[in-house]
Length: 456
Image (cartoon, rainbow, N blue to C red; front, side, top):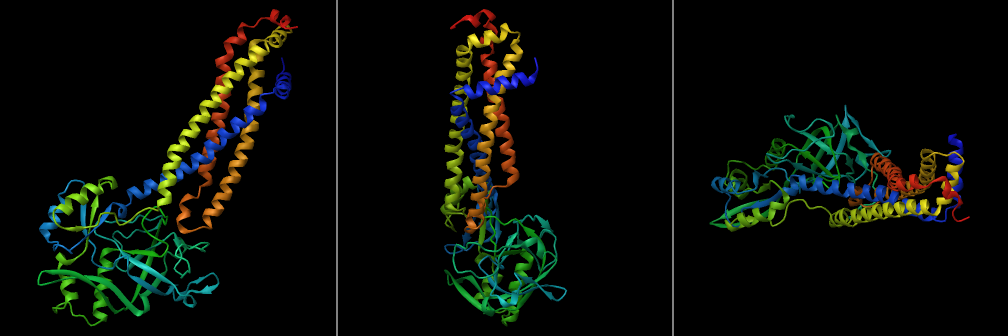
């Protein structure tokens, strides 16, 4: 029997089937759930994984506000269970704000948005890495073994001032386009502001200091991945620990501070027991344990890590990983039950019809193929509708998130990921009706040509 006849019968049966609309709606919902919900689950879970693995998310500040942090103290804290490292953070910290004087290559100043960067108020935070901190790059070279006065910039770079603390619609600069250029910076409003600790007759404390800032020329050698779920910001550029220390020493020299005198700033700089440190734990879940242990030793340690993910991301990750998974599972089970029931009911209701097909020469294999065509045609319609709706929904949400605040960038769905889940949903949509037909196949073999006379 020709396949064209089988397809014709399948189409005729589909049009006459009163339950076709229900099956299309159910399978359409399953396709949407498998694509959209799965994509958002993957995106938010990836953000959580990035956050948990980030060194800043596993670091807690340790300050000499209660007790000086001597070499013995560092050794004792390092021996606490779940502590990986205790790093000195003295140098250029992530609170040092700088004005950008220019970004140039071979004396040619960079133009951004058809306007010279000097014509815009632009600032950046220069962040010095700690001893064990590494910042992976997505292009160019990393800061490991790099020459001094090199830096890496964010993949999403926006150094210009903005009005809202939650900037929206920022025209980010591609950080990779800056590799090989030199950025010249100077302390904000020509001054370098930093916090230093002191010990006066056993009284520990800290104060802010402000000194004149020299100019710094930093060669851009690489770009790191800038995302709301990892430490780093679109105004953060990173330098090595050695460069950060050199920058501070240059500032002292420019301000006329002699590192051999006995001032409080010099005493802080030359005395490691007055420095600030970070305690880096092996996993973020062990932060509370480490805090309790170090706190019981009498030292001042922060009860939270130095980097926290946006609360909405945590809520979204929990929502999609639990409620989303349950919804997909419920729709999947419901689809299987409905299609199995539909297949069995179809065999019972079409007993005389199937008997007639056998009487005129159709074989079990051909009738089974005809019924599969019927199911597949409904599935294909549902997939096209559900897939199209999912694509439109993702396109709309991506546009909203892309032009929203910096934090919403974490929810943008990569189209390659979407197509992957779309293919998975197609495979599942095809597999479910086929398996359901196989389950009901036994009833097909029991129907005989004589059953064509039943119910007539």
